[in-house]
Image 1 (cartoon, rainbow over the protein chains, first blue to last red):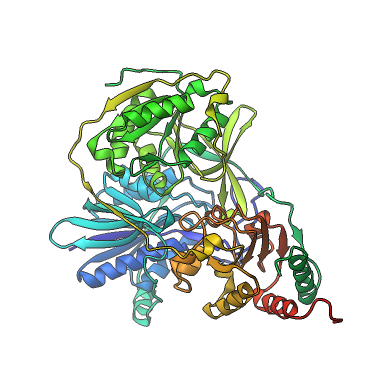
Image 2 (cartoon, rainbow over the protein chains, first blue to last red):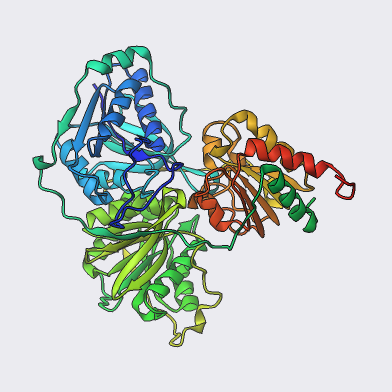
Length: 259
Length: 339
């Protein structure tokens, strides 16, 4: 029976207003709860669920490292069809660098004998793209990032992957299992929760691992501060009603002879 | 194994190759390394991993004037993350440079974090800037689609850095260094070891639509257009201009609203039209990298905090389903007739 671990992260929706916390070290927690699953991880979870459909008997765990609020995103993974939810609970809202998160995931997954670990290519909030390949390195798994297509080769203990290069080109590999893949967006169309999964998930408990279980990993880097970006161009914001703005824009377009 | 032991090589640049050629992004990373070291090339050395690359290494050392290691191994070309990490980590563990600079390309992102994890280095990705804050070197990178910048400092002896393409300008002539001399070249052979990764080769992208590269005006759609039906507005707006084309951000392709041949950005196409109209585009660096060469940028987004406004000449904070129809209507009326 194949065991798959999907690493998911709860993020603040980047389309929401984002304010820098007074400490300057991360952003203000959002009181309206506009947190959701990182979109790239939705693709990873969907890929795991499709593998389970193709290879019945496959077991899918969904794991997240995060503060208490992250439990909601793990529950979402159960709603979507994950078999088990694992919460590595952080005590506070402090940001953790990728190495710290990867170390925690590897500490949990180290003796669980996962055949395949899937992650999103990056998180929408910190945009690091490091946790996946770092987990692979710590655990000695083979790995590929930006995966656009994957196919298990039955009875061969290998997986065929295509990863995305610039300009839409791809390169193909086979990896010996166990392996970690970080999947690129667009690899599939993530599904919506089904009622049967939602009902099952309602009564299901999460496996919660408290921070005290292991010594915290020693950070290798830290955030000095967050700052507002400086505008590259001095842009002019058009003012007025929608119609007035449209008139101003059309005038600019005509003055430049584009229209 | 390594003859040329250089304590003073504080910075190592790993070259990016495709089918036996050094990619231009490598020169940008050299420019970054120079910025990091106050323009002094003596502290920088380059590693070129591949097969039969001594000639190329010689040429590089001549032109750029920095020392080059030709890391030779049959299994290093084509690119293979496992083989690259293994070969590089042996060298780096021995040299212990302060910084290892890698292009923030698909392949760079593929091996840099694992390499760092394995050599107990810090890893900082997608770097857009470097600054010295009272002796503390910090690296700047975008978060939240470019709405906020994060400054990161390393706490480790070695730091692996991935440098965002298109930010640091490659030098036209590296021979302008005050101390220009030919760099030295050393060949280091790496024995092939049994691997878990097998390379099967490249799969070329389907022919790209030429429209985007020759268009004078590009109207581009992002997630903010909300619904697939609103693409009609984008097409109508594009239709107002001569030699125009429709582009989009990655999310629009991922949702199947437009084909990937329309995608503009780091993993898509790089464009530089005379006019770029960004509709509902957040302005993540992944997209901006593909359009920052545009001569004039108009951005329409209802989120006033969207990062796209940082690169726009004209910004309009408006719901595009209301705003674009108004523009279409107005542009069809005769400008000289009394309203």
